[in-house]
Each structure stands twice: as C-alpha cells, then as structure tokens.
Picture 1 (cartoon, rainbow, N blue to C red):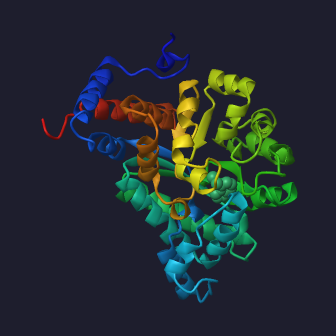
Picture 2: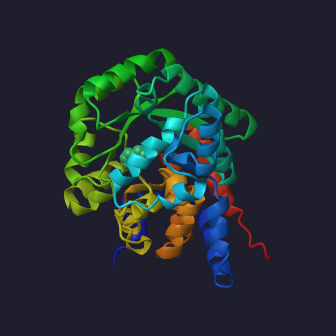
Picture 3: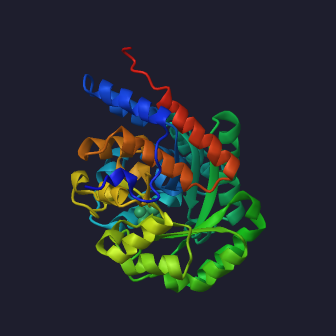
Length: 373
Ligand code: ADE
Ligand code: ZN
C-alpha cells in the first residue's frame, strides 16, 4: 500500500521534527491535553479572515452607540441568537448589516486591533486580512478612512505584538465589474498599504469570469490575486478562478473534491486552498465537523491551510478552528505540523521571511517536550 504522507509535493518533516512528533505522540497516550496544547502554541499563519467578520457583538454595540447608529437587535444576546445560518447568503445579510456601525478611522482601527490581539494570543505570527471597501464606500465612508484605520492597526501590531499583518482588498462579486474597477481606482492612491485583491460575497450566479478584466488589470499592476471559489459554487468556478483570473490561492475550494481532474491539477501545482472549517459547518457546507473533507484533501497532496473566515460569526478564531477540526476527525501531530507548514508555504511573504517562519515552526516541534517530563 502506498503511504499517503509521501504524496508528491507534500512537505516532509526533517529527522529532528520527526523525533519531536514521536515525543508528542508518546505523551498523547497519557494525556488528552497534549495535542490541543500543541495546536494552540505552534506558530502559524492565517490567510483567510475577513476583518469585518471579526467584529464581535460587544464592539458592534459600542461602536453603534459611539456613532449614533441604530441596530435592528435590542441586545448583544439577541444579536448572537440571530447567528443561526442556513447558507452563505443568510450570513451575508447579517454581516453587511453589522458593518454599518463602522464610520471613522478609529472604528476600523479598533476592529482590526481587537482581531490582531486575538491573533497574537493564538500564536499567529503572520496574517493576511481581507477587507470589503465597497461595503463602506457605498455608505459614504471614504476609502482613505477604511484603509487608514486598518493599516494603522497592522503597523502597530508589528511594533507592539510582533504580528506581521497585510491587507487584501476584496471585490464584492454580487456587484458589477465596473464597480470593481471604480473601487480599484479609488484604492490605488493608497497602494502601499495593501498587497493584493480577492473576490468574495454571494458566490453562486457570480462566476469568477465576471471579473476577468479587472483581475487582468490587477495582475498587470503586480498585485497578489486570490478568489473565493468552490465554497458553495461548483468545481467549474475553481477552474475559472485558476484559468481566467489566474489566482495564486483559492479561498475555500472544498467543492473541488467533486472533480478528480481538478484535484489532480490542484495537487500537482500545490495551489493553496484556504479552508475554513467552522465557517463550513456554520454555513451548512458540511452537516457536521466529522463530515468535513479536509483530511481527504490533505491526503491527496493539496496545500491545505486552516483559517477562521469570519470568527465573530462562526464560533471561533483560528485556534478554535484547529481544536474543533482535530477533535472531530482522525488528524494527528504530523497533520498539525503540515497544516502550519502549508500556511507559511502559501503566505505572501518573501523567501527570507518564509525560511525564518518555517525554521521557527520546525524548532517548535523539534524542541517539544512533555510538560510532565
Ligand atoms: N464574505 C465574508 N465571509 C465570506 C464567505 N465565507 N464567503 C464569501 N464572502 C464572504
Ligand atoms: Zn471568506
């Protein structure tokens, strides 16, 4: 039988990492706390997190009061109780309504800073934040206010938390390509503050090819390019994100498993998929965590990463995604190492930074000792 951990292109742990993994496995036989502790403390990158989706109800209500905005819910508890989604659209309706409290540069800073502090606590050393400028400019909030607040938080996170954070501007796919072009034009004067573009919002009925021209322009400008595809939409959307938009990562992509030829293409090219387990369960993409296809995707040799998507709405930040996934599925310490390795492999960082992060990851596992030893 072939060993699935040696599928072509899959990263292989060094002997020192393998020895550390063996110590973790031995310690797991006597304590169920070992693997969760490893998952929490290992260094990792987050590559798929919508900053507007990190707005916790408490901060949403505080900003509503600060700005004199009224919310259609009487309390934090009533709002949380409404987070019972049946699909992507039922979530997006509440998510866009929640973003209406964001008006000033300080609001955007406060939201991003709250996430970045959580990221530091989860041992995230590099994170790439999606933001949806059209949700704000449509309400009269200037692009400079949005980007100014978010980028100030990213700068401060590097200085005060040691967390490296970059911004990725997302076009809303339920709007037109002309509106995406206008958004790009408005953001280009602030180009030094963001690194690339993505495509999000309602997927089905809005295939990637709708944005072929604006993505071509973004590539010509030297921007990094990613797109949501195959979250609810068919494998055909993943093919066109690859072939028409020429993306460098697929956000979600879990529906690719329906198409063996697509799976071969993704594995052969090590095209990263930014998978979001709690999101997929909360939006009913999978009925339950134990039915998630992440282990199958990983075994096929795909470059799979774990991410939180919209943590304030889906029941947890990045470490909670790792914990829920590993509690429900047959995944072990080697998978933990590989998922963290993939997060740095797929990150938009230079070679020096990538080498450093991968060394830090390997050192964490190579030097791992049981707390009881
Ligand atoms: N915007 C925020 N979260 C999203 C998701 N999971 N899919 C598409 N668009 C989004
Ligand atoms: Zn997303």
